[in-house]
Amino acid sequence: MEKKWTLELEQKPDFDQAMQRIYAWYEQEMVDRPPIRFSAHNAEYSASPHLRKEWPCLKDRWFDTEYQVDLFIDSIKGRKFYAESFPVFCPNLGPEVYTAFHGSELEYKEVTSYAVPFVKEWDDMKRINFDWKNPYLLKIDELMQLALEKCSGKFMVGYTDLHPGIDCMAAWRDPQNLCMDLMLYPDEVKQLGFKANEHFQQLFDHYDSILKKHHQLSVAWMGIPSFGKMHIPSCDFSAMISPEQFDEFVLPILQEEIKPMSHNVFHVDGKGVANHLDQILALPEINAIQWVQGMGDNLPIMQWLPLIRKIQAAGKSVVVDLQPNELEQFIREMNPKGLLLCIAADEDIQPDIIRRIEKW
Image (cartoon, rainbow, N blue to C red):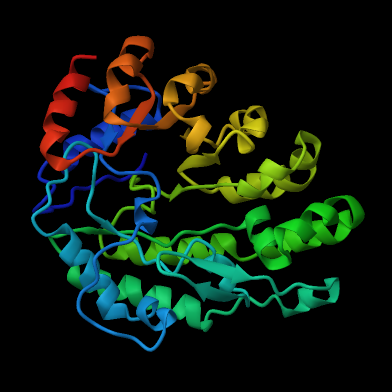
């Protein structure tokens, strides 16, 4: 039985009730309505107004610990966190920072960063070196520690975006090269996979231990907390491979990755990754699927109702991105159990959206 506790947050007085809804959702149940998170997909990588400051280069801005924490604190001033939205600071140096803990360099852009592939030849695998004194890892620790010093009564602190497994391998090797490697060098790929996951659990537990010592929950960029260990597994690279290759190269290390966690919400980024949905749904450790339908022709959400129902029928919960104008039709056609609605809506209309969903 997981130990549970409350957080006294100025802007989240209904914390306990919100967590009850989250925990019911993890089990494909519902307290009084589906949980709602008012946030746009990938909001954590959207441009935000900067406090007045200049840096010699973009990396220096990303590495300015006090600036990053104060920018977040400034961004939540005066905000209301309705429904199951939580004020959460997650230390962030970009989505491929896990690869950098092992030797990659990151190239910084305005709102994200990219790993520079460095396993050019198979002999370069010896350059992969997980190091607790790695500057990227030390910076994430520093960001987390400063946020913990400043968060009391104001916001939650989570851990950074972590992508081990085949997405890490693709960043080290380059996705195009890895596609060819699966056919030409399967043994080397499996060796690379071992290196990608070798230190993952140790690293996850490092962050989890720091957070729990400070009375924090387990939460990452998705903003869905757990009193246990909450993880967001993903395999974006799998959009480019066959189901047989998924079984051979992804599943074994994915199963290792998710086994020790209390709650796993799998990030299914588009219909290419959904080609492997049956294999993912068969994993008992997966509690839920975050379905990301994409943009352009992949909108609106209504075309994906059969896929969402399939996930529900498999006994898994679903995170669904909705536009406010899609809500009425979605409510008419869907069973609310096991759904968490992620809605990008202005704060002034959020209470009305909650009232409408309460009648579902």
